[in-house]
Length: 631
Image 1 (cartoon, helix red, strand yellow):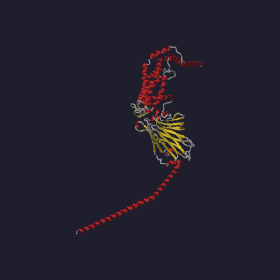
Image 2: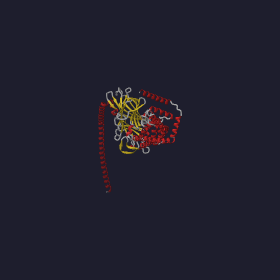
Image 3: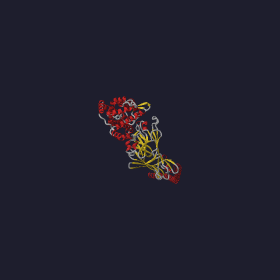
Image 4: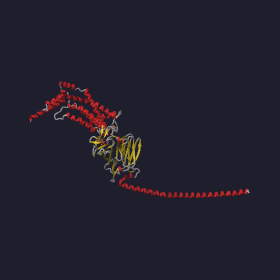
C-alpha cells in the first residue's frame, strides 16, 4: 500500500513541476516579445530621426544663411564695407583689460578705445578714502576716427565693433583691436602695456583700406574728456586744470582758463589734458600737422558743480600715407609729477607749471633737487621747515646788506632833510646836493632795494613750486591732513566772499608773522627813504601795508595748499629772527655814523657812473636855466 502511495505522489509532483516550467516559459516568451516590440519601436524611432534630422538641419542652415544675408545687406546700407565687422562674434559690448602694478585700462570692443583708466597707487581726496583715482570712467571720455568712405559714407569708429586679440611678448601685454572690412582689410588700434609704466604704446594702422576709404582728405581724430574732480577743493584743483601742448620742435603752450577757450597749434607732438595732479596725454612720433583744441570750465558754483572740472576737446586731422593710415603714438595715464614725467624724456615735465625764466630755473635747479633730497629721508612737514631754513640762511647775506643800507640811510636822514629844506625851491639843486652827500658818505641809496629785488624771484618761485609739488598730495603734518590742500580747522556755517566757508590755521599764523615783521621793519624803511617832491610818503604807505599785507595773506592763502602757507609762516619767523640777530649784534648806529663821517673826510674819486650822472644833472640844470632866461 505504501509503494503505490509513493508512486502516486511522485506522479503528482512531476506534474506540478511541468506546469510551473510551462508557465515560466510562457512568461519568458511574453517578456521577450515585449522587449522585441520595444526594440522595434526604438529602431523605428531612430530610423525616423535619421530620416528627419538632415531635412530639419538643412532647413535651419538655410534659414540662418538667409537671415545673415539679409542682415549683411541691411548693414551694408549703413556701414558699407564695414558691415563685415558687425557680423563677427566680437560685435558685442565686451571689454578687454590691460593691467600692471600702476594702471588698469579697460578697452571696449565698441569703438576700440579706453573706456576705463584707473590709477592703482592713488586715492581720491580723503572724503572718499579708498576710492582710486579714475581718469576715465562711466563714459566721461571718447576717442573717435571719422571715416569717409569711397561710397560717400561718413562712419564713426566709436559706433563700430573691433575684434580684440590679446597676446603677451615677454612681460608686455599686447592688444590688437581690428575694425574689419574683410578678412585681411582692417583698421587696427594696437596697445602695448609694459610692467611698471604709465606710458602705453598706441599705434593706428590700416591695411587694405585704400580701396575702401577716401584718402583724398585727412581723417578727423576726435578726442573728448570731461575731467573728474580728484582733490578736496574743486576750485583750487580747477585753477590748475589746463590743456598743454608741445608744438614746433619743443615749444610748450596752453589753451587758457575760462569758458570756451581755444587754440590751433601746428606740428603738435603731444596734447595733455592736465588736471591738478593727474594727466591724460596723447603723444605722437609723427607730428600732427594741425589741431583744434578746446577747453571749457565746468565749475560755475563749487557747491553744486562737484564732479567735473573741465570739458576738453581735440580735433586732429590724420593724413594718409600711400592710401593708408600709419601713426606711432602713446597714451600717458598717470600723475602730473615732475620727476615721473621727466623720466620719459619726452618733454612732458614742462606741463608742470614751475614759472617762466628765472623763476623756473630756481625751481628746476634749486627747489626741486633740494626738496627732493630732504623729503627722501624725513617727513614732508619737517622737510618743508628744513627747506625754508636753508633757503633763508642762504639769503641771509642779502638780508644783512638790505638792513645795513637801511641803517645807513637812517643815519643820513637828518642831513638829507636839511638839504631838502635848504633847496626846497630848487629840486634839481637839491637832487645834486643829495647825490654829493651819498657819494661823500659812501652810501648807495639803491643798496637797500637791490637785495629786496633779488629775493622776489625766490618768493615767486615758491608760489609756483608748492602748488605743483606732487609729493605733498595727501601727506599730513600736524593738524593738516593734506599739505597740497587747505588745512581746515573750522567749518563756517556761511560763505565769506573771497575768503570761503572754512578757517585754515597756517594762513592765520603766516599773517600774524608777517604783521610783526612789518611792524618791526616799517619804521626803519620809512626813515631810510626821506620824502621826495612829487613822490608818495613812504611812512604813510608802510603804516597802511602793516595791516593790508596780513589781511591779503588771510584771504589769498585760506584756500591754498597748506604746504605753501607753512613755508610762508616759517619764512617770516626766520626773517624776524635774522633781523633781530643782525640788529643786536651787527648793526650799531653810532659806529655807522662814525664810519660815515670818516668817509666824508676822505677824498673821493668819482666812478664813471657817478661822473656820468653828475654831468647829466649839470646839463639838465644848465638847460633849465637857459629856458628860464628865455622866458
